[in-house]
Structures are given as C-alpha cells and as structure tokens.
View: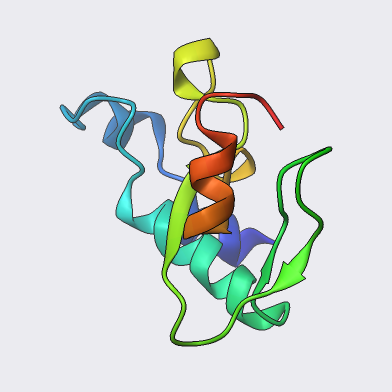
Length: 97
C-alpha cells in the first residue's frame, strides 16, 4: 500500500505544480487504472441499467472514464477513473454510474 501511494498518488507539492486542466486524467492515474484493468481480466463495468459487465477483447478499443462525470463534480483521482469499452462509454455519455 505504501508503494502504491508513493507511485500513484502525488504529493500536495506536485499537485500545486500541475497546471493541466483537472478534467485531464494524469498519467500516473491512467497507468494505475490500466494495470488494474489488465490484472482483473480486461472487464468493462458496463453502464448501470443499460449494459452488463463484460470481458473486452484485446483488439477492442477502450477509453478512460470518470465514474462520476467531471461535469457533475467528479475528480480525476484514481478512485473516480475506470476503463470502459468504446460502446459503453458512448452509452454512458455524461450520466453518473
């Protein structure tokens, strides 16, 4: 846990120096989410009430998604980012999961 916090969660000082728009998902968060996705069998969580959780083929396109949309106050932190297949991300659009 200490290693994950050190590698994937920035210090307050590094957050102050990050001038990117907060809608952008930082690289360290993208890497952590991608590793989790790969280690858990490449499953798309689907869209609640619309599509079920399903396995994604290696050649299928995937996208990073804010679980609680940025437009509704969601952050780009590790616990608010997931990977969805292209189709599910289009269905979800700006709705909260």
